[in-house]
Image: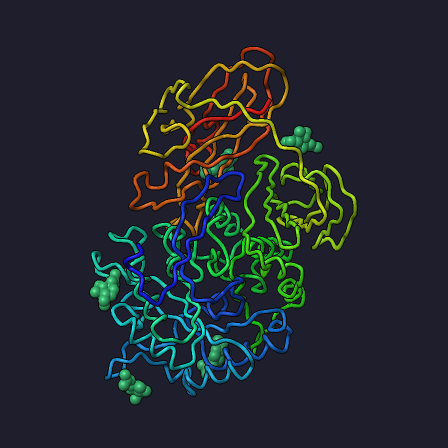
Length: 574
Ligand SMILES: *[C@@H]1O[C@H](CO)[C@@H](O)[C@H](O)[C@H]1NC(C)=O
Ligand SMILES: *[C@@H]1O[C@H](CO)[C@@H](O)[C@H](O)[C@H]1NC(C)=O
Ligand SMILES: *[C@@H]1O[C@H](CO)[C@@H](O)[C@H](O)[C@H]1NC(C)=O
Ligand SMILES: *[C@@H]1O[C@H](CO)[C@@H](O)[C@H](O)[C@H]1NC(C)=O
Ligand SMILES: *[C@@H]1O[C@H](CO)[C@@H](O)[C@H](O)[C@H]1NC(C)=O
């Protein structure tokens, strides 16, 4: 890895200790230090609203609107022209150029226009032979022209490059998309990373290869952000789908290196206002780049006031731009109850907590402070409800709209007493039946057991008799593996989740677990299916004495995937 890096790159070895309750520590990793994006990049991009049809008028009016609407003053800085700006071919001398039919003044002039507004100029290219565009004409990409194009972009005054991944897989004769390339995309991104550094112009490098080959493992050495998932789509279901993929990766983020959850749909009138609040809250606290994808202002459209106010929320932007640079992590999900909790540390000994309502009905939800490691809170701010409270102990209850989020800032809090150590029951002591089989994992994987039970289905189970000292409900850590990534299914039904049921004396608790994969789904020894995640859940049905515990996927035939997650073990709190 180190030998791939140019001498100009300074490598920081940063210990990425796990901050997440459901993750194991990540190893030391090399990181690019170009001094840029010490907080997540913020800005505006043409794609989500205008697709691959940008033009000069659009970019001018939206850049001006960033200033006029007060968005620039809140930190939205980069104006990026996404796909559709160039031509099928390079100039005769090999230089890439703009389409002068839609950018009559040219890109150097566009750069000056953007800079004169005090904004940064973002350009877009692709690590393939053509850029991402369906339909014709195809437009030439940067593959094998990295240094030439980086030099051109720098000469136009570019401050940011978003670098896509279409038409890049040589072994398949360069199809539009290839989610299973024969070699890692990392080499192609390495070449552009080095080319940008060689220009001597500071250019934020946004890697956009849709999460193929687990870029969190290699992209921090090459760029300032990397897309973790396939594209966001203009529908609410895209939000839980993206979040379920990000769960095992949050500890890979840090100053200068951010998980990109994709551009915002806020203001595009495809989500309700509470859904937009959920989207914006989670993207902000996970430290994603905040890139507006709405039409702020053009000849026919302007952004609605409620969406604009979400984008302008100073508290939420403050969580995103917080100097500590810690991405919030997934803490708890109540599967049947339909809500989940994310939390992360902020500077000034503060914490931000999101309680997301996954159900499509308005209601009250209660945050159990223990679930974010807190006992009492001196001062609490409930952002979207506009409520403040002091001296909160044990729990906080707030109103939340359908698909909305309670977003809380906690200050002056005390830590909850450390939980007792759970008693661990390895899957190695469970008996598989039906479809279910025990699989041995590669060295060091399926932590802490080294094997797991796979093919858990409506007719495949793993069971064990467990003796309990008391009856009632017990808090349990379920150790699982799931790397069923919604890549090709991301536009349709893919959720990145798998179900499991835990039956204790026939009392059934269903959990829907997120991804746990923290290594390449294409080239790592376990293909990401041997990386363990931990899901904390309250399970009822226990009796004093012997209990029959059956791990299964009851009702799985009704889901879109009848196999459950793989099972590694369970830790039971007394
Ligand atoms: C730019 O795009 C807008 C929105 O699609 C369109 O209304 C306008 O005609 C376009 N202008 C040019 C010069 O292509
Ligand atoms: C190629 O030609 C264009 C247009 O004349 C010019 O702007 C550019 O600098 C040239 N590139 C090189 C590498 O000479
Ligand atoms: C990276 O650039 C080098 C030098 O131009 C080239 O030989 C190599 O093929 C490139 N790697 C990829 C993966 O494109
Ligand atoms: C809060 O969580 C703790 C630890 O999981 C548990 O003991 C307690 O019963 C919970 N309280 C409520 C109100 O759910
Ligand atoms: C999990 O179970 C629920 C309830 O039956 C179902 O709606 C969902 O589709 C299932 N998830 C998967 C991944 O099959």
